[in-house]
View 1 (cartoon, rainbow, N blue to C red):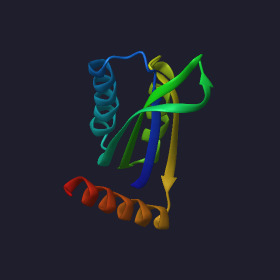
View 2: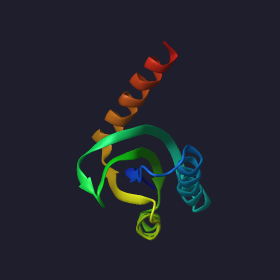
View 3: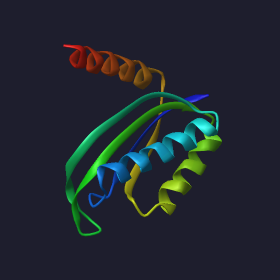
Length: 114
């Protein structure tokens, strides 16, 4: 199993319930296909660097997970089919990137506890 990070942007016209439902849909897709979800971060509404589909903001969501490489194609096909997703990017974490991600998670968790 490889470690991956995927960030996707959801359209800003969604209600909070619709946004959470979409996030849960993709989380379910990962876990139902044998992926191990390591971390999930909802970054909230952010301004885009440039307009996408005439929208200037979007909900950012990041998943960090371990999965078989075949699952990535299935995940990205589902991102493309869902009209609520306006952009996505999935990367494979190499050894040093995985270590950095763990440090970043620990730092983020300490801030939340304080």
